Amino acid sequence: CSSDLIRAFRSDRAYVKVFRDRMTLENLEVGGRPYEVLPVKPFTTRRLLVGQFDVAEHYLQQGLKRLGENAWLKPGPELILQPMEMTDGGLSQVEERVIMDMAYGAGAKRVLLWVGGELSRQEALNKLEAL
Image (cartoon, rainbow, N blue to C red):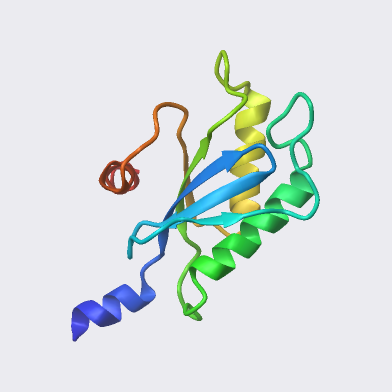
């Protein structure tokens, strides 16, 4: 079926929530329970949610590989990244840049940084569609 062929080459879409020293990834295409990425090394510092860039990027990359484990010809995923902690007063330009660069470095094709209330699966899909 042509829709199966199109789906086979379309990017995965995921909602990534970043917490202190952990992330959850939810595949927005197939639904299901989000899975948690728990790094062996911490990536949060006292002042920054993503203070150890290389560590955070590595573990996000591992999570994205798991997300698209059946994808050998698919482009990188489209992501919504949401910092869930340490956002009082908003994010600085440096913090925004770190999170965006982490996502692109981990293999994302398109990224939306979301700072606000937690999104439902449909809200997240709608935001990605609007990119």
